[in-house]
Amino acid sequence: MKNPKRRQVIHAGLATLVAPAVFGGKVKGPTPDEIEGPFYPLTPQADQDFDLTRVQGKNGRALGEAVVIAGRILDVDGQPITGATVDIWQANAAGRYRHPHETNTAPLDPNFQGWAIVQSGQDGGFKFKTIIPGAYPVSKDWTRPPHIHFKVSKTGFHEVTTQMYFPEQILNDVDKLLQSKTPEEQGMMVAQKNDDGTLRYDVVLAKV
Ligand SMILES: [Fe+2]
Image 1: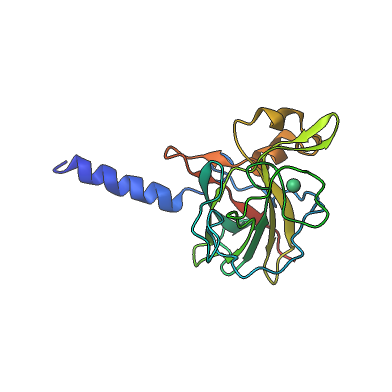
Image 2 (image 1 turned 45 degrees about the vertical axis):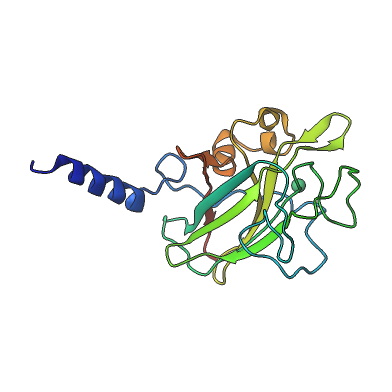
């Protein structure tokens, strides 16, 4: 072969394009539902863009470890769903939601957006930049692991309300919600870490 390096590059590119990459190369689904929880945002906010680490009109950055989460919205055959609404909300790095029903006294972070709504693109892709939310107490013997609430909808598909978990979090192993799922379901709810440190998380919707 004249130029093996170039061939390698082409192969790498193709692999990225065609690999279903969801759940060990096989599309399963739909993504399991999880409770919405009490903290779906009630207060309208102007800034709902994909970057939750900055708030429009403020100079600071959200506290905590920044992370990029990217994935695709797919149907159960692995085909991309274009124009799905991806609505996410989460606690800040201290484990507190900006919500009137919040009882956690951890500090608010004025530079954390907390809520975002984006549309999936032509390839079903979406992306957020955010911070890893803090764990927060539910009761004396239960601390929720870091998680992001997702609500994904598109006409013609069943809406999915779920929670995305972070890999390598020890609280995942004892969480009452996550551990009530089967191992296969858990595999669809925990994001996968890419070599560059970003996270991959796909959501699969069933047709109506
Ligand atoms: Fe939550």
